[in-house]
Image (cartoon, rainbow, N blue to C red):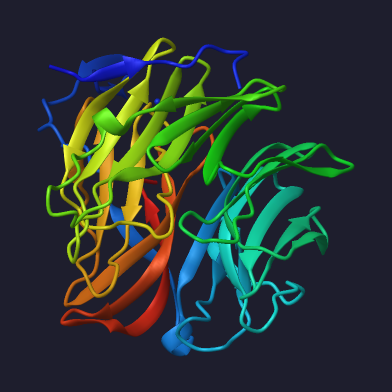
Length: 368
């Protein structure tokens, strides 16, 4: 039985023939060739030391995109940007990354409108690429945890869950930035008047005027009697006006999990899938559409745990085989290639027995 809770009311807070001598001749029957199953594979490796880690990727069209390398928690370096043109990835020389800065999210509306969101230790920045050059659009004194870009004049930025000095939810209309909530930890926007967010055990909806709130605690993993877990909503993705997905995690002490997938059908929220995959992305769960109505959930190992790349489709969560061979691999970010069911991914490989020893930063591709 699917558990549900009431939804939020809008407005509240993809014959062989041979011709010869003018005669068409039927060819011999050919054995069926099974279609090659889509799989994740590594398409770019960058040796950049212990800080090597593609922390965010974005596809701007079928043959172009960007990926961003560098994790300053492992070594104080400046992040680098890599541009995709067809099957080639080339480092951009003009990316204005700072020492100690990490790209935490990336999005694009076209090849000439790419947005990057970073953390710089005590604050954060918003960078934009116009097809020729990068520029700094906004600097915050608090940390960015995620973002949602609808258009160049409809950009949403959200803070990091679980920290005291919370950024909240900010909106950019093409001219000015406005803080529209101090409670929302992350979100996904369909438009300036249809935005979904989360915080704690609640989901929020913004109608252009105010936020409304629905408590989904009853759909999350239960709180333990020993107080050894901390269930909460960990991510959200607005697929359409009548289809919104959210992830939750039980945050069980030491191991994390279990993970649940919640769905809003335009009327109510219900749990549609669950599985035990540890803590997953920290501080919030990235959710990437797969181009066919399903979702990809990167679940990098946290604190030395095993990592997963999880696919949600048809009410089921399955783990995807990764091309790590004798190495382990962490996928930090996934992005759909527009108009396809193909994906890009970013992360790093590590010694199989020691997730803390990074070997090489990698860009992956699924399908194609």
